[in-house]
Length: 513
Ligand code: KIV
Ligand code: ZN
Image 1 (cartoon, protein in one colour):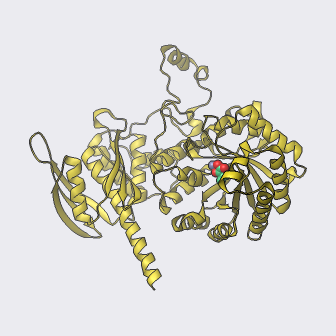
Image 2: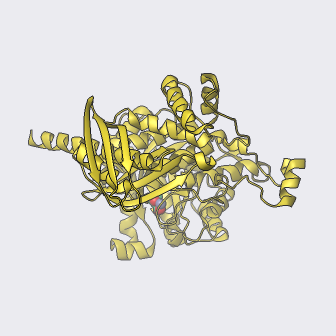
Image 3: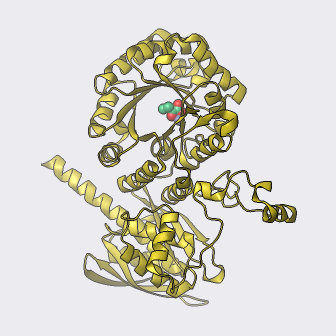
């Protein structure tokens, strides 16, 4: 059995495509889960791209144990310096440097000849090796690069010390037979190819990212770059969960394995979807809501008689339970702990007493508490400890022929502020009152509300994007009361803005000093 390394780029390529940058704290929460999933490499960010990204890579490098921690850099010294510096505390650092090699990119993007590009690539790899023994080089737009140049540049960067060489289909242009042949040709025409790991990185512009990655591993590639839920530039990257489950489910045919703990796939997908505010389509392979639901009578009959009639993998393999526990106010602490473990939260990762109290409060309101509700409680807990503003009272009146009004109390680090405001509707009135109480105001660019399972007593989750001086901030809140959920979501965004303001003040103070 040959092993395929899983290189996760959710925090770099995936994040690039989001409406707003992830905060450092959000990136660390995701990185911790990726380590639990046991990915081989975490691409944590692009350190030169912004001071925040630099700090995120640096913190992940310090705090996350297990996987290789990788940073991206263009093939220029200042990028490589930033990358090396952000990674200096990593136990297993990797510098990933890239340069475009297709005619169209070389001519139109940076007007360089083939010789100049090869020279730059070799210099970048040689320079990166001064800081780190693990250096990856990517030939950006390899899918549209002439094969002769590809062989030459791959051979040259391996000589310069590249321990991994990545062949990306940057624009998702190739088809599987073609991409598999490119990889086979690289193996057959680059004399020192056995001195490196061949990696692939496929985009999904034609919906072929996973198929192209599969063709590549069948042709000998031993690292796949992918993202949770297929997030990434434009139509995204190859979906990690699909690659892993193809290799797992068809292991006998393919003779390939990964180091992934597949039971962590579903919890990872949920976490990434929530934090990134990108929902997963219902019929998405492996992790979509309907991926294990059988609708037709014939199928249901078959599954009742023998699951394997219509199920090629079990939901438990990827960390989904096919039966629902009844969690109510009568459920004990140990049941909650057990359930949280099943959902991928290791003991010690959270404060059980605190979660149990929140669980009881929710059970009190809605009777039965579902897995989705528990995950919301966990998420709220993960983010609330640093909050400056906490909602402690809310009263809203609205209706036909009355002006909507909201009165609230917000605890600001121990001081309770009382405010009220009117608005176009009850949600607007709440947001106006929050603006007054916190002294911060943001524009709402997007607002969605979703009901989690539970019929009339469902928990409503509100996701919103707030714009604060051009910065896009995600807020999430939930409650059985949708107005309260909206207030929590907006306050969640306001707390993040407050932290940004503090960081800005600190930076300005440092500059002045
Ligand atoms: O798509 C791409 O080519 C990339 C490289 C930086 C690897 O993301
Ligand atoms: Zn990419």
